[in-house]
Image (cartoon, rainbow, N blue to C red):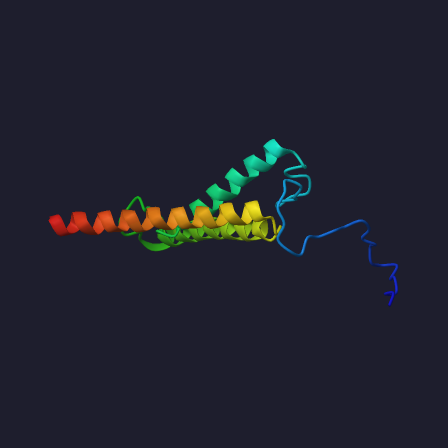
Length: 133
């Protein structure tokens, strides 16, 4: 059944979107032309997605405030900017995983997992040092 073509709607031709997991370097991640079917750029994009996912987990610890208790509008603005940057990373990782590339999926999971371990280890060390005092 053919859909009628509306003159006001642009025609999308030769656009193929992968709707199942697949393995390979021929993938578009976040932006058209990136990694541009190049193995070196694909490997670089794997590292990039890994560090974005790792950064999301590290940022889940909360902002490191200059003052321990931010007061007033400055603290609200600082927290808002920090939260916004974290959410940008979260959505970039989500969009990268939506490329359905197995390599991207694996490095995103590894980045989140390793970041979570680092966060929990730091929290454990912080609790132990406060108990010793």
